[in-house]
Length: 238
Image (cartoon, rainbow, N blue to C red; front, side, top):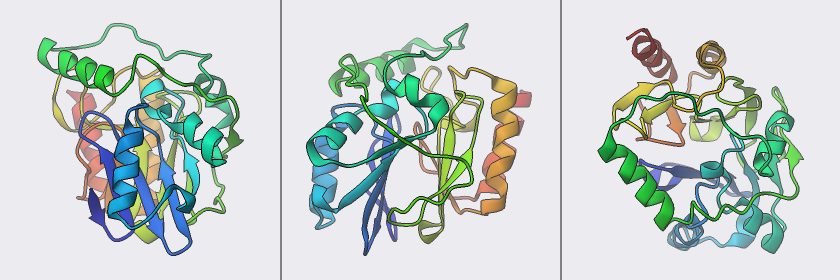
């Protein structure tokens, strides 16, 4: 799905990943679930592109529903996969997210689990090699993506700011569709290691002034980063 100039999404409001398309090639942000590989190939074909145009993949964090096809892309097509060093072990299948007690509704939970099963979520192919993505760094990839540290959801959570797309990719720093309750709109994401730290980390998004705020779960948010952060704050207060 084309969201705007330079900007595409694969997946859906349950689990999504993103492509930044420039003349220099393509940068992918997050890799969804393993079954999103077919979605990736289809989207590249619609764009008139191929896997040869993909120059790098950046993971916002190392959870299984973001690692998806990353190892296949790295192993079969020599595409480097970038992740914050504090989440590298998680992306390799080591450290696990905290679960704890979560609010949930049966319907949305079953929808999430059913979609995950259909997309290969029970057969995660963990990474065997990663490249460090450090906060404050601008990667030498299409779109010149800038790394923003977002600890909280996980120790090495990051956001990725791509000025040419006027978009900041936030992974699970926030959600616009809660996978366990079905609630829509910007809000804290479930399965967050340190909720207070995650809320504080959102302030780091504000200097981007981005129009698009793109989470791993939920609809793309096109009403600006300031309103997104304010909406999460209001949801957290409730």
